[in-house]
Image (cartoon, rainbow, N blue to C red; front, side, top):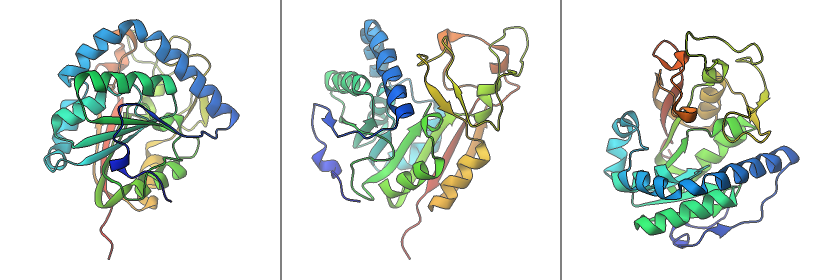
Length: 274
């Protein structure tokens, strides 16, 4: 697949691509645009947070230390608000190219990166369908609410391996598939009766993010790992954590207090050609 080379994505304005989406994906994009518009009043607060690099977890830094010391070119599919991109630059990345289908998210992320002088550049595009050249990334960094928006996990994994150069890496820090089953009750953990670990999809709650009727796709940990291996990656590390990657409104749910899995990290490499 031919596309934009990373060196051509050196723009302080987002690059737009023609987006081809099915009805569900189009509705989900609208839900995200609406949710990101609602975040605009908190722009200065998020700018200050971005300047600290605090959104990159300590566990991520440990797993990525050796890679980031090589000053990699990073591609970040489903880059969202771009906070992690700034943190990756501060941690050693040469440049980060963010990909997201939300024009609102990309516009805000680019503005924030420009104000902070971070070498982050953004493209409005779908995943799969990233308009970048094969093997353009030393590191593909993604997660924190990425897989649940993918209706085809194998197509997603195939796109990830296409983007990573031989010898490069995929890093995924993601919500654990089980975390969508837990209630947010404060007294003790409970399993939601309206969801299944082995379900196909569900509608995002109105009190969650992005709400607005967005449809989320459920993938088990086994399905995600198998898709990544089948695409051609070699898994180097898989860790599970009790701490979720985010808490809506800072809620201290009983399910988040150490007994249950709420997030995971996976580091994989693309083997060098024989």
